Image (cartoon, rainbow, N blue to C red; front, side, top):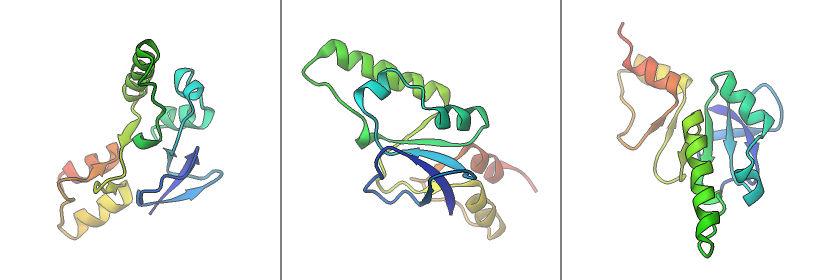
Length: 132
């Protein structure tokens, strides 16, 4: 199971990770963000994880919204696009299962494939697409 640093509130959905509060961790889960945090994103642990190539997941139901202010809503959408461009993986915590590199190795060794609704880390994809 992936050890993930939790930023914000813990998502109510089971994401298949165990949360830690300090290093070492395999990735980061952003459970929630305030308006100001999203608009001026600069969470050091998230930026460090991205720079190190660790997966960062953002739980989308924890994102702030501003349906009554179109200009603010557009700025929030722009901030979300920027996070996606950086490599942050958005998840709703639904039926999609997160496949980490460790789980990908086990799947490959047993000859199994992840479900169609699985979300894979970049390294997990590489492992499952690799040849023997």
